[in-house]
Length: 340
Ligand code: NAD
Ligand code: LMR
Image (cartoon, rainbow, N blue to C red; front, side):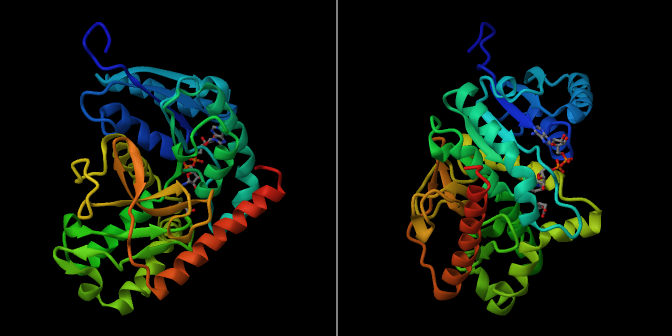
């Protein structure tokens, strides 16, 4: 607490802060959507020189919002400065996928950004730093950053699959004519890519099994394709990749991480709701050690815990294995490029 009795600000570094998702995220973070109405926030905006004007303009607008919780805004172009003292690092800055481009094309283009940023986080961030990678290919970018930050506990590096999770919940509720609040037990497994597996095996709508409500034909067919290709659908319809929903998911992810999974009351009992997070694997559900893959997880006491003991049937097993195999192949590719 400071002399006015306010809590110490949490320092949030946003990379790519001059871009679209950064812009959509920072005002909500400054307004208290990430850490609640009593927690001050200091923002650090990290950009490359071409993006600095965008970040500077956003900083002017932040001043003009007169957010009571926002204690400072600093703009940096050097990772060492941008991550100095960061408690939360949102790695958003990279190149968005454009029409017709597959994520594999992005590996080489974006991989080189995340090594230096991982090293800067290792050397300059706060001891409790929590890292969320949004920039695509998010899981593999997170892996690159993590491998370049040997002094930071590996589990602090996460990638965003909360957007896929929220899509999966939203589309299920829409199809079933149910309220979003009635949906639970949805899981996104694997990679933030078209191989991801949105799994309804354990999902419920109210007190009914979701697959009984919507039918396995749809729930294990068209639904999976719709969720997995939603990013491309948005690109096609909007003419650009998702922005506000991505920023929203990043805020949901960090808020749950720090404050506990929404709706769980901080609990981790079997009935407590879970979400989907791309976490550093220690082998759960057959995901090879060290890959950053999406799993069902709850946050308890500020740490993610993989939901244990879910039964995985044959269909789920093959879907999970396929997406995890893609992650392993991406890891091998960046390894060959000398990025990890
Ligand atoms: P954008 O092009 O509007 O903004 C990206 C910004 O990053 C630009 O301002 C650019 O100057 C900056 N940047 C580039 N390299 C940088 C670096 N080394 N350091 C700091 N800043 C850097 O893109 P956007 O729409 O904000 O999307 C950002 C990323 O998020 C893209 O990779 C996109 O594919 C990804 N994305 C991920 C998800 C997800 O669910 N994981 C969802 C939507 C978008
Ligand atoms: C998304 O899921 O909306 C983003 O990852 C953009 C994309 O390339 O699909």
